[in-house]
Image (cartoon, rainbow, N blue to C red):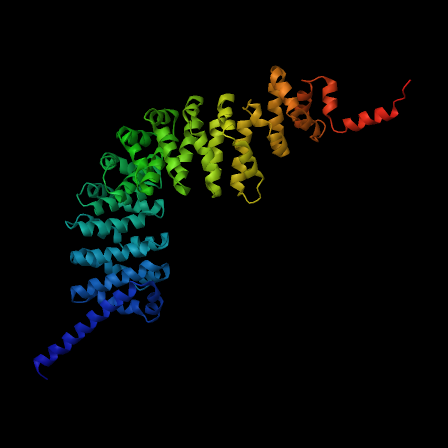
Length: 504
């Protein structure tokens, strides 16, 4: 056999391998093929090709594995059990940039599914190899490595700590300073995923000077980058007063408020989340945001948004109002919150809105009146009584009603509740009448002519109960014959007296 024929056999084998991996990579890009590929033993066939002598075969084999592992945790599990990860990690340090990108893609595809799979990626020494990749010259390799790190860190504090211990954070901060937008996005996302778990992890990021670099990008025209930047800042700010103050001191306000009108709804939501995470800490931080026009901007944002995007804005108004009377007065968004309560279908959004009303109205009669005038009481009663409402919604509606009613002296809003409210809410309503009526003759007269006094007489209360005491207090504001006149059965008593009356 001639030398040419021998070499031809090798060439044919190489062509067959190339064709095989390319076909598998194409098939793996469509979800409907994954099960058939797995049943055909694709993992064990791709594994030796990762060490193939031909670089393009190696890269395509890695790409195919990444696509397969990306679909579900069973396939990712198969990559782990097939002992493929150590090979990838070894090759990350040795091979060219195309292979490095493909290998990092496989690591990310495995790590994304669960903490256990992410831990398997860490256990095979991937973090050190990914750190080396973050120091590469090629931005595509850095991006692929940052992405894998982000998917490892997002699961829990333990995995994030492993990422931090590997020395990733300073390199990610360098990545957000690179000119490539795609790399900036992924690096900001990774910082966000690390910061979210604990104050200590967030502090590690703060210590590398990340806040100043993130702050410089808040007005970048790229929407996806802004999403990640605001997400990272809010995940940092949420943990403590000190870091929230550092975020504010980075002078991102009032410029960030402009982004509440951004065309991208995720940018808007992440900005509202950042404002919420800052205002929740202290009255002073809330006051800074209020002074910059933050409340008015958030109220406009609620008007422009629908659904879950509204949630951080609703909660931000509640947090600001909770701090003090003056701050609650600054939350002029009661009509807008009433619209949210009316429009939203999801229970958790209604519950958050009910909670916010409770925080606004619980301070003074003036605050309670603002809530009452927005005609919120009947809606809250209906949500509390609705059997379809979640338990959390019922609890929050009841708490809000109770805390606002205890301050409310605006009787026109209280009167309809005499007819609608259940007894455990009704006692707070009658209690307010018993406080106001003794001192207001006009209100006493109106209470009679509107039918309120008659309704109070119809309430059946246990003798000695709190509600009975409040009813007695209301009755004591009127002459005895008036109370008798409006009591149930009084007309029958009168008729009986007429029948028994003997004219002289």
